[in-house]
Length: 413
Image (cartoon, rainbow, N blue to C red; front, side, top):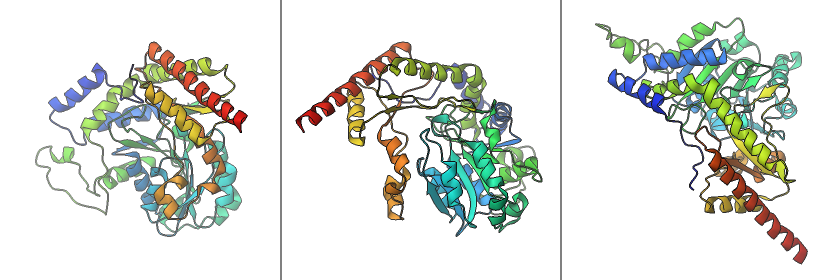
């Protein structure tokens, strides 16, 4: 039995939507992208949604939109994929890393301690699909003392009058916070539609806008659509209609638009998401928890509490009392059973580039602690019960083998 880690969900509806796009003879940005944006508006309850070609593109675009640049600081968790910090660096700003809590989300206490007059944004990361503690983060950015420290350098920054709160929601489409779509909790929420995500467009992302007054979210939407297309005042679809070829470049933009051929994949998936695909993920999470709950080494992932419910993007299994080396041995055992697993994530300060610019994992002890004992198990709608049972059996076997060897070593020592 060979079990992949996270294959894309491709059913007949997806194939039909892509074929419809091909038969229409229009594959770059056009009606499919607009339809996907509309579905995302409905799913998230956001004030505006802008599809782009990746999460990273969306993050760079929004940081640039806010005027973040050289010398500015953006607070990010040390425990995240590299793009969370790279988008800051690509703007010339400094990622200020902080540690996480035991549920993998950014620690608000650490965030507040790192705020300076240079802080322009905070990026919370919804690891495994669990929303951060956005109530606490919102309190921080709206704290009168923190607002007095804020030093606006652009018109957008002056208009907001405080630190911009961004959700790195690459994992958390469909997550909820206090009964509402979690995307509504921040000024800006950015999804990823990469191939392994709950909804995929092969590559892609979406910016959800929930900017407060006095911002006009529709005006910002119109601007961002141009911004993602080189600052051009007409997209290719508009130019194709009749004698409408003439265009202008209004400002220095980016090339970050999503094409229709990609949007078609996500469009077919999102129509099934809330009623079918997301509940299937949750069901697999519950099966894992039920299977592992009797073992003293099992640390149950936080996927739901009195405030939050995750999107069940990952099943981040943590094993109590093991080292990083032992975790890797357990993974090796699973791979030998042809079960593909992953680790989310290697903390950024452990990666060569970030070490080279001064970050050290010793400064983020809880990030390392959570990383060292984490194994991400397969969790996706196509996973069969017989496969889930096999994964559970092999996990238990692999963990018990490694723990037994460890116990024997202790005896001989």
